[in-house]
Length: 336
Image (cartoon, rainbow, N blue to C red; front, side):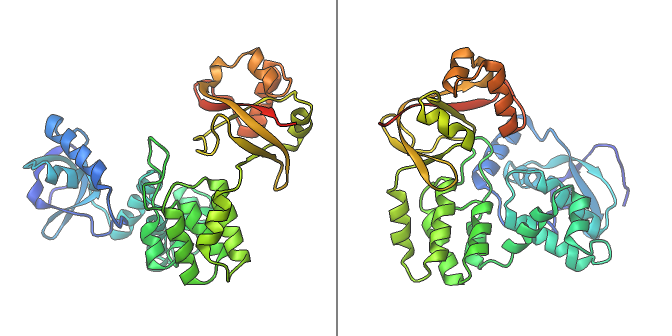
């Protein structure tokens, strides 16, 4: 078969799916959206394929291949290259670890396959991590998930790229890892996972639930979940902020990510440093704004800072000051 680095068109019927692809499933909603786009404008990015005995096999572009089938394309643009099996697995893994729509257990299965099939090339998790470009502890967590009960494996999902939420009925990779690490009985692991998959639960609350379930192995999981859900939200602060809150200098806090549903106007939340809470706060207002719109008044409400001082504190906590970053700003008053 002719191998070419140039883009050429191949009949879709001559191309086969990647038999080494690590995916357990593909988000059908996104696949349908991609297929609709391909119907309108065609496949803009070529597939990378390799020659096989009965035609060609997809190496890179599995989703685009499936969407092209769904869009009933007859021909698609491709680049043909020679790859060995281990090169295909490695290439797929490197491509997929950078994608948000691949779950930790799917990545773990690929890592496991690489280490089992090619022990000389990947003798340790550290070696594999260096090759892929991730921390070895991440490889360890992914591999750990492959040992979880099958029911839990199928519940693990990546966050949605736009909303940053976990799909309904699923749990995050980090949640699954914590369950496996803290709770030893498989039946109880499954029970906790099912409870946490019922509705979106804040990460801090998830950690508390898992901790309590592990601490009280004979207590019903539902009872623990309900008790924790009914507690006031604990809003964590740095130790240096405690005095500023207690003397009412700090009446505003800005956070990244998505606001917890328990944090709403009129709600009473606990101000906490580590576990114990040191003050009750009433939420007065919540707004969402970019960091570049913060002014001296914002900085003052954050704890009596000047704007430059607040920027330095923010960098200490978050690593950098990204002016285009959206944050949610909680205005509060201390209950006396």
